[in-house]
Length: 202
Image 1 (spheres, rainbow, N blue to C red):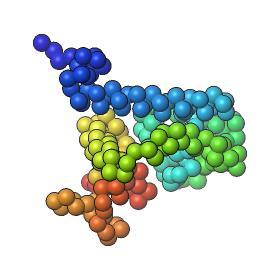
Image 2 (cartoon, rainbow, N blue to C red):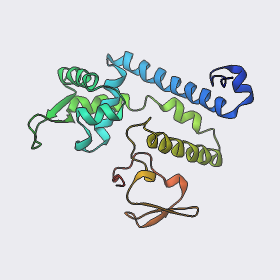
Image 3 (tube, rainbow, N blue to C red):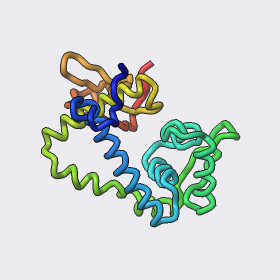
Image 4 (cartoon, rainbow, N blue to C red):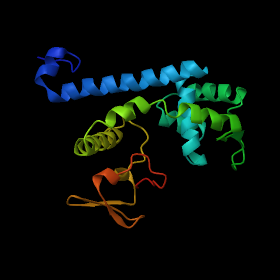
């Protein structure tokens, strides 16, 4: 007999993993609801807001159609359509200064930077609720999430990650984490999910 679905409440009663999956789905719904609410207020789509915030905080080689499609797990045409609207609204400009004339990276315009300051705090209700969680519980939660993200990347579900676990500078011995770039031992709470110095391990 096939195992019951993780979305079956009866299955969730007896299986902790199923409860966790259901919980992660609820958190995902909360994130999407907050993003949609902000998007409606400002006349943008959720993906357009995500692109603006991403461009604001990542280096230029990541801010192109191909990489953004991977980052957000959507098609290149979806990203291209979103960029076309952002260019039309004068929130981003295309930088064609790379050696490949066909490709470009995105830069925020002055208006784009203002829009980021209006949109980037949409997830604050989640942040505020985490303030009520004790530090030890938060550390354990992060430890679990960071491992899960890495494992999902390893099996191809998440296409992009910039976490310590997949970085060439990361080393682990027994229960210790070490960064060879920073030349220091890391606590698990020091592990980064989106590191600007990340270089993929070969």
